[in-house]
Image (tube, rainbow, N blue to C red; front, side, top):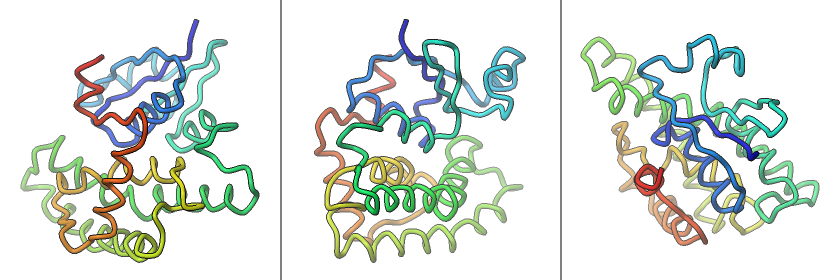
Length: 206
């Protein structure tokens, strides 16, 4: 048996898990979940994750772990993607918390409204409300990346994977990265990492 990962590869939160597992060469079974078809709301799925969300990691013994950045942390422990030095480890967590609190709620939600829902008129006001805080998150990232090649320890870690997931598709939610040269250079550095795959490549191989 091997671990199972339940997810939608075009969800940034799911993609980050697939990318990390691939780069860490962790054997796994990818189980496609269609969130628009409410496949996370079935009785069988809710038994695994009562919160009804993906991604979801299921271990060989049936134990399940949810929340994308918790899964990232679990998979990367003991690897080069997670520093062991105490402060650097905490800095990785700092950026992962930032991603979920100050980045994902705005950039990811805007993308969901545009890509998944088709930008319906009734959600336009909600979409516009996401733009300013989304750009603020990008401003914070840009400021950091003008002085650093990566987010922690000047090397590629799960902090980069976590933030890359929705940043590299931010344009799908209406965000313009032209004014963020440091972010765009960092995105390219992430793409140059060993075993990197984009969403489409993962979709085609599954």
